Image (tube, rainbow, N blue to C red; front, side):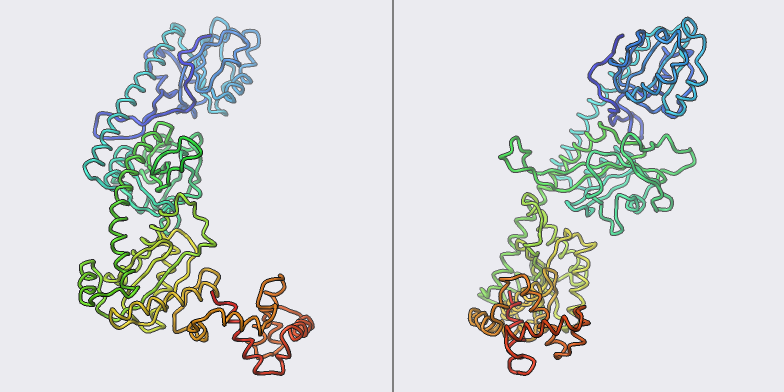
Length: 605
C-alpha cells in the first residue's frame, strides 16, 4: 500500500481562474473526470458509476492486501489488480459499498491476471452508488497514475496560492483606493461568474452586483435564500455551506442542500440558462478584533457577504469569500466611522433645539437648511423608541442594530418628505417632518412603522411611536418633543411595547400627565383601589381587567361576561369580590369615576 498524500481532506476545492476572458469555479484537486483524461489512463474505460465523475480525487492508494480498510481515506483513487478477492470475485459488490461508505472517490481495477472480468453485479452496485468503477488498461503502471495524480493536484494548488495572493492584492487596492461595497461585490461577482451581495446584520441587501448577462438581480433575489421583501434569510442560511436552487422565470422550483449533495453546473443540459441553476454560499463579515481569549470582546457582526455561482462552492471558494469579507469589513468600518461623526453632529444639533437651547431662530433655520432639512414650516415630531425590556440584541451588536434602526427610518421617511430631519440617539429615533392633520399623520406614521418593521430593515425589533401636535415655529419644537415623548410613554404601556399614539388621542392621560407631582397620582390610585393598585398577588391584574371591562360596558354584566369569555355566574362572583375590596361601585357613580381615573393612573409609565 502507498499514498501520494496523507493529510488532504475530502471535498476540498478552490476557486481558480483561467487566463482567458471568463472566470468561474474550478476544483483545487482533480476530479475523477480529470483523472480519466490523464496520459497514464490511456486505454482506461469507465464501466460503472458515471454519476460520480465529479467526485474529488485528493490522493491515490493501492490495494493488494485483504485488510485495506483501516488505511482507506476519503477522496482516494483506489488502484488494484483484484488480488485480495481473486478467489471471491462476487465480493466486489460488497467491497464497493464499503468503500463508498468510507468516502472513496473511485476504483481503478486492472483485470486479467487475478480477475478475468468485472462482474455485472459489481457494475450495477457502482451505478447505484455513483461510485466510478474504472477498467484500467493492461499496459498502464500504478506508479505512473499515482505520480500524475500527485503532480496534477500540486500544480492546481500552486495556481490557487498564486490566485489567492493576486485576489488579496486586488481587494486591498480597492479598499486603499477608496472603493465601496459595490466595488467589492463587482469584483467578487466577476470571480464567481454570476453575482455577489453584501447584506446587513439582519439580511437586508446593501449591495448586489451581477457579472453574468443572462442572470438579472431580480432572478438572484428570487432565490429561496431571500424572503419576499428581498431580505437574505440569515437565520436559515448558515455560513460556510454551499446551497443550491433552480429557477424558472425568477421563481424558485428546487430544493437546497450542502456542498456534497448540491447539483453543479455540469449537471445541467446544454440548453438550460444560467439562471435555471444557481449555487450560493455566505460568510459572516466580522469587524473589530477577533478574540484570542474569553476575556476579550467578541468581534462584531457587520453582516454577510454572499457569492452566487453556477457550480457548488467548496472550501477554497469560501476562503476567497473570507478575503472579500475582510475587504468589506474595512469598507463598512470606514463608512461607519464617517457616518458616526456626521450622525453625532446632526443628532447633537437636533437635541439642542429640542431642549430649547436656541440662541437665534434664524441661525437654527439656516443651519438646518445646510443639512438639507426644512424647519421653516409647521412641524410634527415623531419619536420611535425600542422596547428595551423586549430587546434581545447581543451587546456586541447593539450599536449596529441602533444604526440599522435609524437608517431604516431615514430611508422610509425620506421617500415621503426628503426635507424631514431624522436622527438616531441610542435606541431612539427622532423625526421632524411636515405637519398634517391628526388622522393623516397617524396613517402616515403607521405606514412608516409597517415599512421599518417589514421591508425597511429596522432589525425586526419591538418599538413604540409617539406623535406630537403641529409646532408652529422653532421655539415650539421643544414643547412638541415633550408631547411626543408623553404619547410614546403612554402608548408603550398600553400596547406593551408596540404602540403608536398621537398626543391628541391621549384623552384623560393628557390631564394626568400635566400633574407635576406624580406621587400624588399614585397615592390617589392606592387610596381608591387599595391592594388592587399593586401586583402583590397574581389575581390583582385579572381583577383590574374585570373592573375596567365592567366600567367600559356601563356595568352590563351580560356584555362584560361575553367580552371576557366568562360564565355569567363567574362574573357575578368577581363583582362581589371587587365590591368587598373597593366599595359599592355598582351603586355609587362618584366611586365609579374615581375608579376609572385610578385604573388609568396605574397604567401610567
